[in-house]
Length: 383
Image 1 (cartoon, helix red, strand yellow):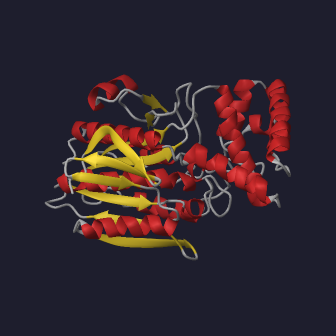
Image 2 (spheres, rainbow, N blue to C red):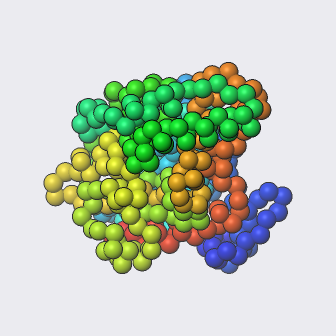
């Protein structure tokens, strides 16, 4: 079946998202589990008779990172990496993007080896969390300064981030609202934003915990990065995320070390929404995987590595607070005994934030994904 999507020509039936295609219809559904996601990708590759090999890496018992190496059809000239699920739960949207890429673009590539890592954080994807089995945010764990960064703003707001026990969603929201108003009055908005996003060493059970050492998934990926340029001079890496940016928009988020500025990228990729990690509307952090990739790039090699961020909520301070609430409520419900009602509420908040079920949102996400990766492939002469 030709899986070329026609823009927004979709309908819903029995909970499925259905795309009209040139040759028929294509159903788009989220996998329900990590295992289903990985099995679906392998089955798709087998059905398409793609030449690949699988290298599973066990992080903890029964939870693996799938490294899928798709061989170049001709002499290899470049390498393209697609990674998903660095923030666990975000791997469900990542799964849909990987399926779309395999169906649409993979058969066209002749001299490019494609490597898929899905997910980098299998524990987080399996249990619908952003963090790993040690409560570590993996996108704060690729430290390039030996974990020496401090977060004084987090220390100022430390009491706010301590885990609290909640009972009903209504009372939890009232308490959270009172606490957030109090901490904003105490620290100010800019300080509080830095506190929430720069990574921290203060609370091992808190959100954005960086750790003081590389955890197992990070060690594995660092070792993979050491061999990234074997046999090639040109590498393209796309890491897939959800949550940042305006709803129904996908942002390309470049490294601070990327030589092309946002305006040049917009022109070359023919894609409108491109930002850079250190711009005011995004966060600057130690431990970011894409920053690590640039830090370790050998002389004489060519790298373009970036994040695709699929926005799920409206922009503004209030929506940022709602995103923070989702993570804090989920984190509290994981670490402390809570009522079943509250646990369900916290999980629903996380799903809404990082795995939207709205069919129109999924359709637009797939459209933006296709537009962005095709622009990058064209610009970087990936064939």
